[in-house]
Amino acid sequence: MSIHEIARDISKIDELETWNEHFPNSYLGSRKAVFELAQPLWVDRMISQQKLILHPNVIKQLQTQSFYPNDIQNRMIWASVLATADPVNSKQRFAVIKKRLLIKYGRDWWEDVFKRKNNAWAAKERIRKKTNSNGTGLSTLINNTILFGNIYQSEIDSALRMIPEV
Image 1 (cartoon, rainbow, N blue to C red):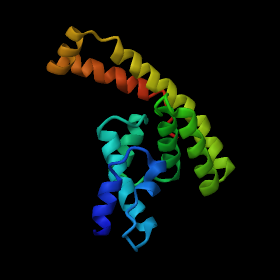
Image 2 (image 1 turned 60 degrees about the vertical axis):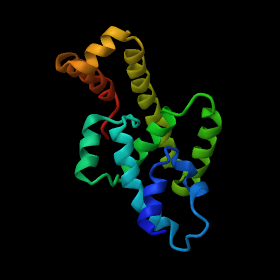
Image 3 (image 1 turned 90 degrees about the vertical axis):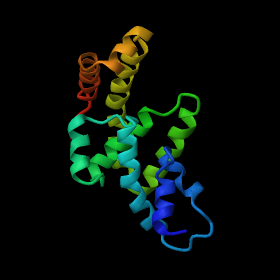
């Protein structure tokens, strides 16, 4: 298996903190190199599937950077990961992510991610309420008409703009 195939496979895993667990034992190369190749693939996929809660301007920046996030954008991404964690195992996942980020980046970095999480969570909840309040008829209009689709997208953009760009 080539480094690019492994990176592609790993980038399909939503939970970043579990990438090490999914790494093939047969690969003898650098894990860091694989992760560096996988990260932009993952960011691109998560944005296209609307699974990352980021300010629209940050998404545009990431697109122009070929989805290679800088330090601040990495913090925003981790805050989004924390904010969108499945409620069933969120406490456990939160603890694992916190531990790994503290080890890798330090306390100040972690505290910045933790502060950013609240804005991402508020935007996620606003989007969730808008999408859950749509009945079947309205969902059909949104999916099949440009006007209602644009209105719906502007609501999502409005929620995402609640998140600071910096």
